[in-house]
Length: 91
Picture 1 (cartoon, helix red, strand yellow):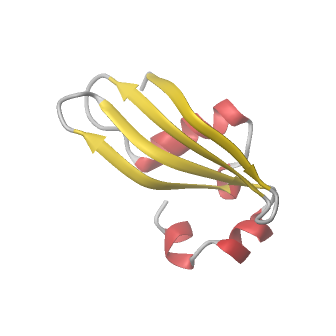
Picture 2 (cartoon, helix red, strand yellow):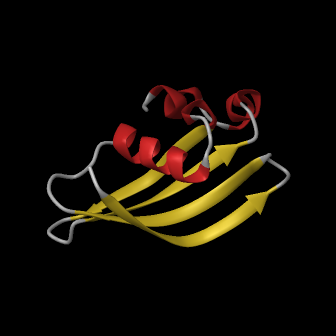
């Protein structure tokens, strides 16, 4: 699925070993799944999917866009330390 991304905020959080990114994804057709979004964003930022977490996804009905937050950790160990287990299981 083709998506156009607009990155609203990009911030490095050294304390938690992660990069925090707020984005808006525009698309045509059905709302993309979390896995599709995570796959596209992982390719864009050249990171492994097991070191990234999507959060705060909001679909805008009728507008063809999704707003959300992506957190990319330095490694899988940092992700396990700072994220709740429910978030990592709900991919």
